Length: 472
Image (cartoon, rainbow, N blue to C red; front, top):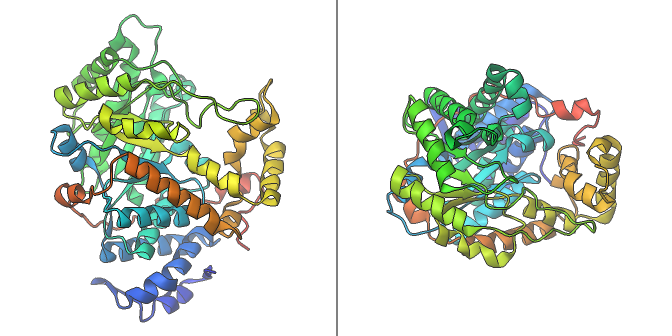
């Protein structure tokens, strides 16, 4: 069991003879001990210590060790540009949203990556997930980089801000305020090592307007503004990979004409290059799937023609990597090998792994979470919903407040084994085995330090609902 260290002296004590930190840099003296025990204590301290300054210092140390070790926070932009030029075989990069047990789940993802020479895989967290999982970008990045060290992974580590989404209500009340809120989150993420950002103003598309370009106006305008902002603040030597979205997931299916109208407006408005590297489209899916009254998931009719047709134009006309599929982890398994065949360069996977966690969690623990949700999130229980539907939709709310319990579950290995098996299956279907050849060729490792003090306290949400994460 890992230790949660109390102060910097204890941190120095466990690093003694293992890692040397001086003004001239970091030197790893005992890699075996670092990977066996020390990195576990560091990450548990970074996540569960109640001392904000200590957490910031330990996150910085983890990042510095990861840089020296060779696990380097990176942008996938140059690989995606090569895909757009047709210089790679067809594959679909899995972007996995890890909502709980982040350090351990990331370890399993790296295990699968190392075993199968995978270079193209992304660790991501969405704006909404940051809130309900109590994982600010800096904590998430520390977990992923610590996992890379633990498993002996060396190479680029792609971390992504997913759905940095504009609220239509807030935007139309005060456009500048909402834009600045997205900028603030984006800076926090980039400071933490997220060099892949998906901007999502697709919520601002107005289908009541007459022309497609007018419909996409607020979408392309804010995507361009955010692209310019990212180019201003990104670290020297790194082109952050930027994604855009033309159709809000769960809405109507996207068309080639909508995409071209968006790109026309975007390129006219954009001041700083390079622009986006991929485009998210709506194909008929919905985030998390659609729960039926008994709690099972409804079958979805997914239109691969949308991915194929828009992806073809994205590559040939604009040099982008292709299309991006959201809301995919609950789709039938037999569909996954179709994504690489249909110009889909990236696929986002989240709820399916969360479902494995809840399906295999001890019943007593699960009921404790469900009771907490029923007491604290009654307002999300919409009229006509069964208890099963409500809990399926809302049980993600039990990840942040019970974070420590999830990390220390008695049957954690059983859950992780099932998740690893799913990673292996999906990654093979998506044809990302042996993509290390492409990351070796196209991704230059640029080592940057973590910017200390740029994050917010991860426990702030827990305090709001007066429930500690349980690290005592």
